[in-house]
Structures are given as C-alpha cells and as structure tokens.
Length: 280
Image (cartoon, rainbow, N blue to C red; front, side, top):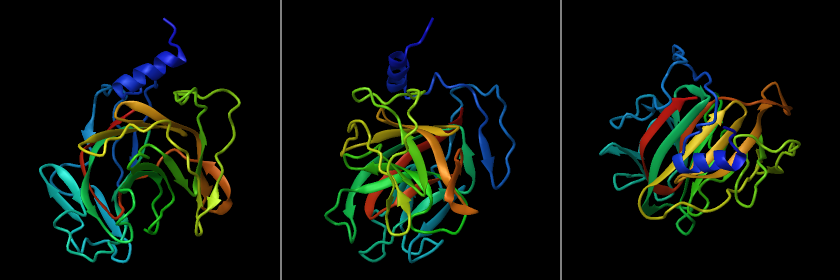
C-alpha cells in the first residue's frame, strides 16, 4: 500500500514515532561503545538519565565551572530538578547545562518536562526558558556552544535555534512541516544573524502545543542530516541539510550528523523525567 505524505505526518503526530524511517546505525563515542545490533526492536528504549544520579552527564555553569557549587541540580523521585528549592546560589543564577559524556547520531530522544515557579535574574519577568541542545561537539565548555537548540520556552517550545550550525526549514503545508522528506528544490538555508560573535538562525515551530501547567512530552528525531521536533505528539518543526562550521575554516560548512545532547540551565526552575533514547 502506498503511504502518502499526509498519512506519514498523521502517523508520526499520533504516535510520536518515526515509523517510516529506515533502520540506521546508532553511534556513540567517547568513551567507545559497541554498536548495537541492527536487529534491535523498534521499541528498544533505554534511559539516558537513570533517575538516581548524573552518571553519564557532565555539568557546566557559566562563572562557576564543572562543579555544581550551589546546588543547581537536585535529583528526587526520578526527576532532574534544576534551580529548585535546594538551590543556594546568588539570585543571578549562572546559565549552563548538563551534557552527555558521549556523542549520539541516528536516534529518537524522548523526555518530559514541567516548569517550576522560581525565576532568577536577569530574567525574573521573562518567559521561562530552557532547551535541548543537540549535535554539540566536544570542545571547551562555554555558555552558548555550537549546537542546534530545540527550544523549550513558554509558548515557543519546538522552535529551532542553530548556533554556528545551520539548517534548511522544511516547507510547511498550512502548519504541516514536510516530513520525513522535504519538497524537492527547497535548498534555501534560513537567514543567519550575528549574535555577539556567533551566527544564529531562528526557525519557528508550526503551532504552540505546550502546556504551562503539568508535564509536557517532547521528542527529537535525528537521522542523518535531518531532524524533527515533536511537542506533545505534534510534529512542529522539520530541518534538513544540517551543517556545522568547519573547525579548520569557520567560513566553510560541512555535514552535521552527530554530537552531544545537552539540557539547559537557563534562569528558570524546571524538572525533567523519563529521559530516554533509542536507535534508528
């Protein structure tokens, strides 16, 4: 039976699963790990956060460094709780992230998040903000690393913000981003702006499907040089032709298919749970 583009989109939105995507290698590096069998079942999820500690993750906070001096991270009831009631640092909480200690490619990531009520300087009046930074290379840790940001923000969850990376935004069919394949001929990269020494794009999600109270489920499908952002079961963003700046010549771009996964610490209380990943 032939599957139409609309049918594929509907199936993806209903299940949150890239059922139409072919099986591909799931790669991890530093430290090296044996590649899983290509016979791995499609529902072979594994925890990326174990619910007990930050094993497999590293910490970075601007102005503080690699040690959680002020109790930014609290783990209880299987949750990562960032900037919650046990935080004992200054009201101007340095921003940063938790990062996986290895790189991933060709994967489906899923997690749940919920906002807390605490907000910190200089963003006491701003929308609560966090994010998943993906395809982040190893290198010196800094506040805004090279990445593609899957925005987690009140009423903007699902936006894409490539930083020193770039992407082609999928053609949208009245709020339906083309996926798993874009329309032929769409080769135009989204505009970049210079934001204090880094080049950034802002690719807006098609629709707002996040809730400000209670838990949200967000999913990321990263396969080859394309990616999809899913918010509470709705496909809201599709990206193609992912590229990164060539570290040997920052004026050139090269294909982008892998990197670390980061969870942002960004001046707002937030909780994460059920952080899991599976190969595609």
